[in-house]
Each structure stands twice: as C-alpha cells, then as structure tokens.
Length: 429
Image (cartoon, rainbow, N blue to C red; front, side):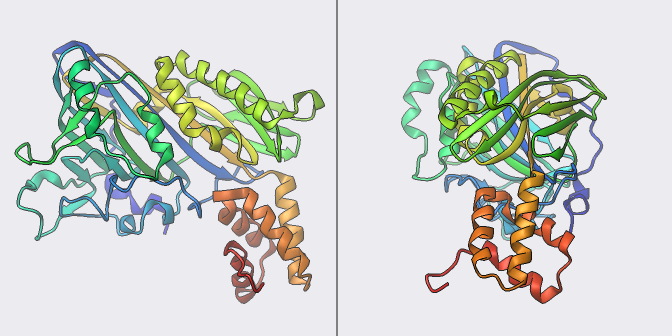
C-alpha cells in the first residue's frame, strides 16, 4: 500500500509557516536542519524504497513500538518500523536547536500533514495520528493522542549555559547511532523535556529536539540522466533552488559540479565528462564538505551547526558510490511541508533542509540488467557480479533491483529467485 493512502488521516491542509506567539522573547533563537532523501531511475521517476541498510539510532530514541505513552498509531504500518516502510521520501534527522541567555519554557509543535513521523527524542507530550490504548500509563493525559500527523513537545526547558553544562552528565549515550551524536557538537542550549507529566521523576535531556519520518510526495527538483556523463536538473517548484551539488562517486575517485542557483522552471545540463573533474575520493570529500558547510551557513545556520550537519552525513553524502544531487530546499517549502508552532516566539528562526536526490545511472541500470539476464541463462558467475553491483547501491539496492525486474518482466518464480540476490550468500554458495 502506498504511503499517500496510508497517511491521509494527517492531511489537514495547513498552509501556515512558523506560527509564533504574540509576545516575543528577544533572547531566544531557534535553528533547525534536516534532510529529505529520494531514489529515482535515470528517467527521473521516483521509486518507492525501504532501506535494507539504515543509519542506526540510539536505543533510547522513541518510536511507535517504544513510546511509553500507551499510544497506537492510526497508521497500521507504523509499528513495522521506518526501515521497512516503503516511501518516496525519507525525512532524515531533523534536529531543532535552541539558544537563550535566560531559562525558558518553550512549547513546540511540528505538523507533517503529508507524511508520518516515525521516531523522536526527547519524549513528546503528543504524537499522532494515534489513539490512546485503554491500558495507558496512569500519568499519560487523554490528549496525548492526536488525529493528525504531528508531534508536540510542551514545556521544553531551555537552560542557560552554566546550568546546561552541569546537566551534560545526564545526556544519554550508547554504542550505536553515530549519525545521531554528531548533532550534539554545537553551542546550543541544553534541553530538558519532562513530558507528558511534569510530576514524573524521569526527564530526557538533549542538545536538540529530534524527529524522523517518511512521506509520499515529490520535492521540487527533478533529475534525469540520459547518459552516464550528463545530469539534467530541473526546478519544478515556485521558488529558486540554491547551492546544488552534483556528485559522481566511483570506487576511490569522485567528482562534483557546483550550481549556485536554479530558478523556478529552469533546466540545466551538468556534464560529468572532463578528466579534470576527477580527484581521489578523500580529496573530493574534503573539498565538497568545506563548500557544503559554507553553503549551509548562508542559509542562517551557525558554523558549528553547519559543521555538525556535514559531519553527520559526510560518509553517506560524499563517499557512497553513485550519482546524487544535494541542494538546499527553499525555506517556504519547508514551512509548507512541516508547519511549526513555537510559543513564546523566538527573535530568530532558521530552518534549513537539504534535499538528496539519489539517481540510478543508465550504466548501473544497464550493467545490472545484463547480469540478471546472464543469471536467467544459467551463468553462475553473473551472480557474483550482480551482488557486487547491489552492494555498491547500499540501501538503494532493493528499489534498483525491483526497477530492473519490472522492466525485464520475469515470471513470478524467477523474480523471487532473483530477489534472493539481496540476501547475503551463505558460505556454501
């Protein structure tokens, strides 16, 4: 079942951007960053995908199977986990930072009308779309459930610097979730969330509010590869797209082309055919990381925030094999997609979302199709090569294999046999 049908309960048609209270707190600053990742064929068609490999989160992060609120999602697929839920977009690691010279209590709500929130931390006071089970904990109020796709953190305590430093020892850690912990490397205020009941003796401490989700919509960048060395990028939205990076990573080398801006309705062909563009992978990664960090600061993020975002995603963005386009989504797009309400009102709000369009190049599609045809003809050596191609595709292997099989149209039994390529071989194979 497609997610656009699954999450219709959350489609409430919000058009507000960031909703602020009447009174403004002049010492409060709120900054947010996150990513939207999609996978598509060389023809530009977005593919539903669920990652076989996913960035691991710490075990203390909450989800629909571990929310301690006695809530059940109205989305019947929520409990199978984000990694197993097919979607066109994966909203990855949005984090919200707070800065204040004074101790404050802030009420924060995020709506995701066309998507589903799947993980979060600290604990929220309200999360939806959901219903409250009859055996809920006694401390959970009846309004913890919500009929729409949203998350609400009430009474988030924003600590001044000295108090926050004393609370550092309360931050949770474990051996997983390296992508999560890099986001702490900023000067943001320490937060305490004691939801849903302020009388609870347990509190969650963190340097940010964290949430993740999935959705079934298109972002405003359309990418087509008619050949292996040319990438057509088109802005299908109403606002300019800024800071576009077209990357091509192969083995231990990489190249990228920077496009400062793409106007609404504009189409640009980016060529990846010059030997001068190719550099050792470490050099390419270092160079693009520096440029990406600088680009992120132009959106309003502080340098340490931009650095934390790049550190969080540098291996995935700059070292994984493949062709991808990274770009800054317009602020107004973010406000439409993820309406935010803050009370009291900060003096400054920055929301920076990076779009990641992962593209299956014509060459990869051709090579995988050729190996699958050889397997169908009985060539056992082709299995090894097909598995190598799929390994390079990483978490995009399953949608890539399904796309090639959809075009080849094998019989059901043969298709199931070829899908077994996604399973690691045993020592007897």
